[in-house]
Image (tube, rainbow, N blue to C red; front, top):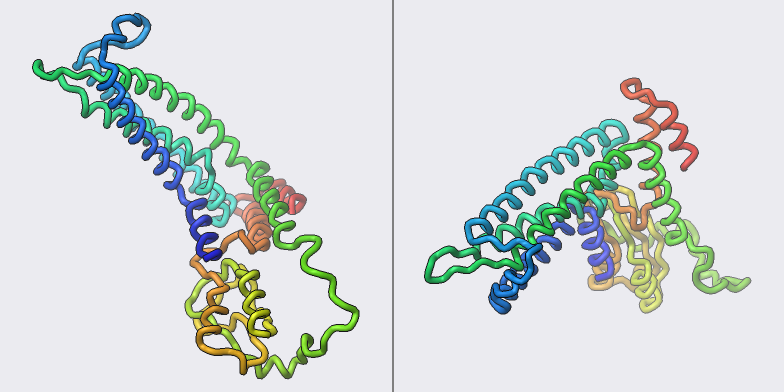
Length: 325
């Protein structure tokens, strides 16, 4: 369960659609609530305020149509900027750093702002009625939509500034180096477990020839080893009086039937326990930085190698990568 939650968390963090989808759902809820409030409070309050919009049904349609149309036009610009940035980043710094952009919350927030504004305007637009027997103009919702229309403009300016800063080599390398430094205390804490006694049980120190007869737990699929549930693995070892030896580390590509770990004594292993031990490992198509500190290091190496290639030839970027690593 722990590995599944980590895998879902990484998938959502790397996805470019998750935050925009949440903001879109929030816009749907806001549209429904604001229209319901319009039905409740009526339109008498509009005539007492001269500084807000108070036009008729045709005017409301025009305002909401302009908001929806202009927002979708800006969305195409945002997508163009994003795709251009991703292509330039991949060619200059390597494909591995694309994860830093797809998981960028500021870029996701920008896209979500435009889509949420468009959905809000569209949902409010469908409620405007101009028939003589049932005229309904959601004044509150239309005025909220006009305020929301100002938000994408500010977000667009912010996004252009953010994109121009994020493609700088210094900022990109600094982000990768910062992620690497943050991962080290988690993967390699200064203190863990209890101090061992001076005289260890010889049984806990199997000789090399004993490992040759150990039971081997193999991989059931092809893919990168993304994480190991060390707590569950330790609990199983204690409960069943086992000694386990990991044969690979997170970040390595493991093929089907390749050894994951060796277990002593082999007589304690049954089919159910072997399945539980195999479930301590999580595999996927891509490497994950959760337990793979070398992924960040290899990103820095890749940036430096691309910078030294004849097509780019930027020694200063290579020096920054070396100094950061």
